[in-house]
Image (cartoon, rainbow, N blue to C red; front, side, top):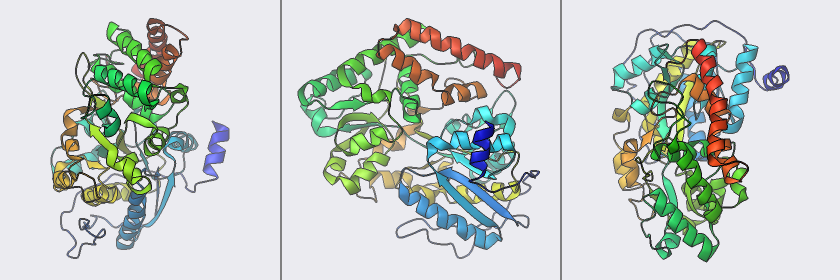
Length: 464
């Protein structure tokens, strides 16, 4: 860790400091809101309740829809000009952020504000409690989406280890022409139909599916969706480990069959961009992903884009659930030099979430429905050229079939560590490759998970 820390800190400036607490709120909007772009919602500015100064260093992922980052960088500098805070924004690949965060927290210096797109609960001890920001946001805009609340609050400690203003649905992406020839013109609606149709497409067209079993974020998400739909889970609602069950074994056996009949060994070494690239290149019949690959295809491969359609979470023996594709978790490390500015910026960013949604081409969804009243209209008539125009309409109901990491419990620190160490993808991959039986793969995974839960429970950070 010391080598990682030194290397990472050579790339980022910052000094250790003491965090301050947000106080009060403001509600008056700027009389001359700044347009976010042609056809985009207008942006508003709320005067902070205290004088801000100094520097604000922000670290966030390089968005899968590049237009978002162009917007965000300008948006941050506009806020800087209004508040007198010097803002620096660093974008890096999402896969590098967990290591970068760990290095900065270990060193006690680095960025003031960090955004990641998955569970950060295992960092609870190194970050500030953002309860004040979350409560202020709910005071202004109503009830926060439960999916986001359960991804940022530890119910055992009552601490908001992160602030979650938004999320991204994770629908199935399918090639309509291929699935029509397989007898399912509207795509699969169940995991059994996925196996049947995907097998036919692989046999007749030699085009595989793209469900990863690799150490990357998309594999983590889709394999949990499969487990939940089979009635399996890592923990139960009371945060007790529940992985070793007939339902988990059945899910692993299903995935082994699906791999053998519809996929190749590529899925064991994918990164987070692999299924995007395969879909855009026309080499995949089905993938579970956000709409980012589709947006890329609209520019790079319009014919492929027109052929990509979407389905909600697939039904299994025990229901139909998908993980969020992305969960926007913002953290303020304890070493943050300017926590006041961090918190005020988060509220300003949230207030303008409609502009963020538009700039991301409808990729980013808000945790407060009141802030994006245009969303269903946009999804029904896509302003970014979908054919047909209502192709994305089903995403308007995504909260009905989406849930949080840790379901049916919260995204606690143990779940965060299990997620970040890729125990679940490894479990599925070992069985699919024939290294061990499904039963043994599940047992071995539980033997890894039990000590993790025990460790965090001993610290008083996990219930059960």
